[in-house]
Image (tube, rainbow, N blue to C red; front, side, top):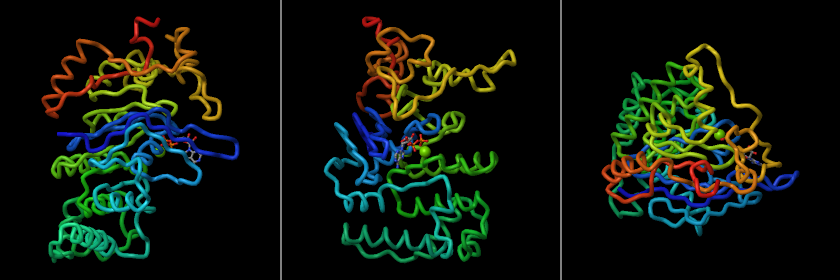
Length: 352
Ligand SMILES: Nc1ncnc2c1ncn2[C@@H]1O[C@H](COP(=O)(O)OP(=O)(O)O)[C@@H](O)[C@H]1O
Ligand SMILES: [Mg+2]
């Protein structure tokens, strides 16, 4: 299986009244077909901007986006025009956002909204493949609603978004995403607005559908539990950059970066003796980024080099990397770099 999304050295800078803001710094990510990649990090660390930039969603007038490499489904996207992006997003890439109300049109029934996506897909694929327009849009709407677990789809399709509960609306948004038969799904905090029980149902549904349809999915969440439950791999972000990446198992059981170690030990379930620990200090202000590693002012393991030079990725442990590499190659039939990496000088003994 090859990568369907690949980005290397991504930088996103916003021009604001107060000067430039580097929202994303030197991010490299990849997604294989059939894989679920989680991006986790606290609010404002650059998760949404990273994924939006990867999919060509940015206000070009005020933003600079640079990447050494940027491919989506085999296309080199660095020279993409807005219309190239639009045609890719309309069919091969679908998005599920946090608030279903903004994704749905309040004055059109959910059935009609789904019909429109299916119709668009058929129109686009027909011009690509010169095949005949398939019939049965109404049947497909019912099938999609049933697939995402909406009861009585024949009746529900005539309802407007406001007639549905939050959970049902998010199911409709997922149905809309599936209606385009995409190869990639991007879900940006898809369950943050829902209660815990509905959240669990929606996450399981997304996972099941992605697995069944063999799609790749990038899911963003500030909640580590959501990511742990759903993903194959995870990228942890801090202050606009990825500080650790690897299989869920490796990253959550042997966290390497002091930030992630602190984050995990601040979770209530880690407090075995009843006391909660917290990472001291605050994430840096985007206008006044520290030099070197952005985490060094808060890091109790910081060394002299950390304040001077931003760390590059290091393989976290030889033993772990070897085992994971074998597994990864087996899963993806492809040679790759070690999947468990951290951007931390601690793992570069030669420079201490
Ligand atoms: N339109 C914008 N103009 C200026 N800065 C922005 C804009 N959107 C995002 N940013 C900056 O990018 C950072 C990352 O934002 P975002 O990716 O939305 O964070 P997250 O999704 O992790 O909560 C923010 O802290 C903010 O400084
Ligand atoms: Mg966000």
